[in-house]
Length: 286
Image (cartoon, rainbow, N blue to C red; front, side, top):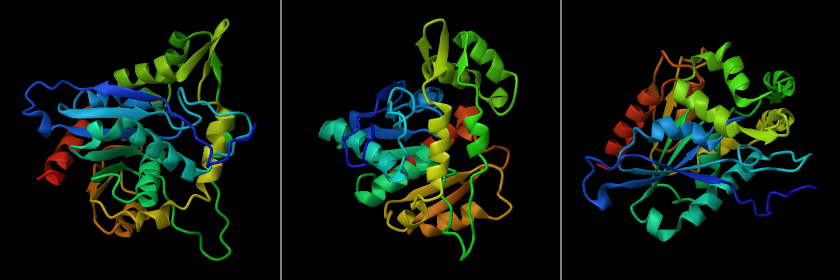
């Protein structure tokens, strides 16, 4: 079965509640949509959301990830990830969004937020984007490739149980650097029971196809259509100055650097990421 981009997909959404202790009136609170990186799922944001008092966090599973399944053979056009975000926003309703809606995204999830805002301007009051997955258009004659495609196809899809999966991931990079709470959430909610074993919900071939489709995603151009305030957050600086150039694509954006963090910063240091988000929210909300 093939699913066209225009067909309605209902993404799984997880409400990640933070403490409201110390938060003032209800009007002081804000609603946030959180979008994950390729291969992960919305619940990996739990450790960050717990550190965001007064933020009503709704994390989605993009299609093909977590509890949002896709059929075999789907080619994962990236514009459809933006559609998933808009579907979640529509499902929140006026009561959830009347105080203002913000987007928080990592890598592919950050790109999905950009596509959603570009497609429907005014959806978000502001965006916090950690290393958005976006690439400038190739030069004439340049052939682009994504080095993650082939290794992802070879990723181990099953384990005897979740405990063995957790031990395996914790023993080697990059997941050996993940915050323990994040790794536990990834394993607990990223696997499905399958008889005498567990299997990844995000199938390796599907994840590889997301990387293939990234090469033709029009994220770079969409950035110029995003009018709300944006902060682009980067870890260790790219030698090419990539994120400086991405930040310049937005009409209203600034760059925030954390040179001791990797591309997996939201998964390795949720407390630092939450602090960045709290500072950003305080700034954009005056």
